[in-house]
Amino acid sequence: DEGHGAKNPMLSITQVIQNQAWQDAVKLMDSGGIFTGTVESYNRGGIVVSYQGLSGFVPASHIVGVTRGLSEAERRNKLEQSVGQEITLRVIEVDRQSHRLVLSQRAAQHASRAEKKEELLAELHEGQVMRGTISGVRDYGAFVSLGAADGLVHVSEIAWKPIEHPRHAVQPGDEVDVMVIKIDRQRKRIGLSIKQLLPSPWDSAEDWIVPGETVVG
Image 1 (cartoon, rainbow, N blue to C red):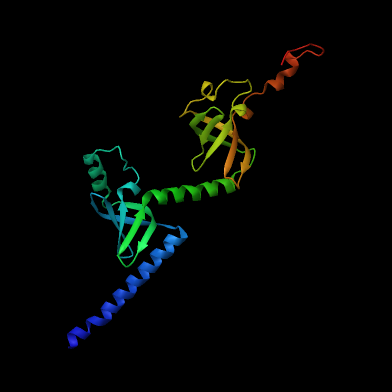
Image 2: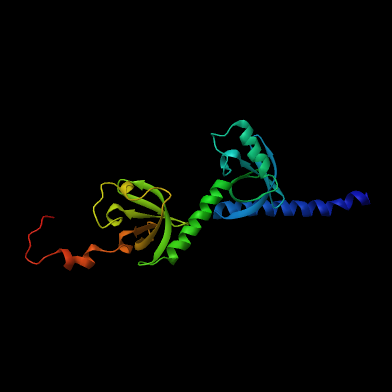
């Protein structure tokens, strides 16, 4: 049948395209790469995003902003509002036999943040002055968000005078100027200082230290 035979080439092309899409999905999963896709629909369990013609599923637990504390109505509303939006995703599971392609927005966000952190670490240098926001306070110091990464201001680097606890000097949300004093690229850690940008009492030492005087310290 001439008409029936004419459909075979189209079927073959479709199969080739699908085969390539599945292969690309596996490569993307193995490389840990991310891609941008448009949300096509949603259901109670999550959202559906197309990847090269394949239907990929993003479970609700892998969607940014959808948390366990949401009510059923709030959850459904967030999923519904995501339809038509472009989101960044990472492939976390590929099972061609069962036509299962699982994607994650949270994993993509983490990957993107890790990449930006690497870029920041590569650009940083000791002595650099930056503006950041206090993101957390612990007994041993304060964490400062520099955007792509957090740095630590050890308690000894917060002020020139001894302080009992970092919370006596800074609070989460405070904007502060910090100096980069140590970069550990292998462990991906950034050491910061607030006090290095403050007037040092040693600059005026001659005004309050008298030669020959006995002091307790």
